[in-house]
Image (spheres, protein in one colour):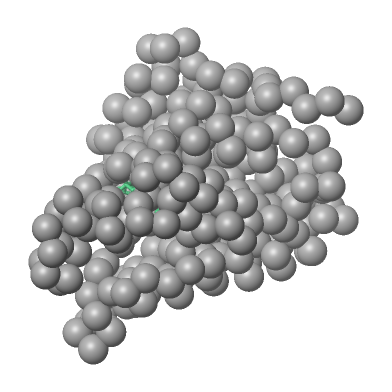
Length: 263
Ligand code: NAD
């Protein structure tokens, strides 16, 4: 079967979709015909994103969800399944960044970051799987990073969490394969979202260099063309993976980083 990049009659739940990469994936999925749920800690921003999608002719709803809270995740996923009839595609995308050298990294910050990235991925997956298994189909996409494969100074918790997502995705590919569920990890390079804009001055301070040097000599140093990865780069890949028609493509980590990482 040839790949059709259409998500007509599909429903998607995207976490952390009130901003940045998640919002762009939700908009792209809506343009491809999916009904999308914008799940985020920030309900006002989630509703605003949903409203923008609805005004553009799509179908979207905002959902309040702290992905680290099991009760909120279960309630939010159930509300989406009830409103849309199902959750066919989960994009576990909510994330934060905290930079500090290990010796100064607060234990509370370590636990907070791992909870959002790893507990969030686990809890949302667990909540949508029974419905996917009942229907015999589904796709789960985890938002990894080049830091799922590479390390950078100051990012111990983030690099640990992003490596961990590879394990969860691979286990899900094995458990879900016979029941029609596929899983993947998307691994972007640096994308200019609020998460990255915040890091530029923080890294400049920690490393004792200018913001321009952080961009040129730290963030984009190893790309093939000195370019940031774009929201469209990531969302196009997310669409391709969601639309792929068979389990020929599952359990993969796919890097979209302008050649920074070639794993
Ligand atoms: P962003 O800050 O623009 O958006 C993150 C969203 O997650 C926000 O809307 C925020 O409210 C939400 N969020 C935070 N904690 C939450 C929680 N506990 N529950 C629910 N929602 C929560 O960031 P972004 O750059 O779009 O990042 C999205 C994902 O992409 C993250 O997992 C990040 O690690 C990953 N990523 C980003 C880049 C990049 O360069 N921007 C690169 C690789 C991977």
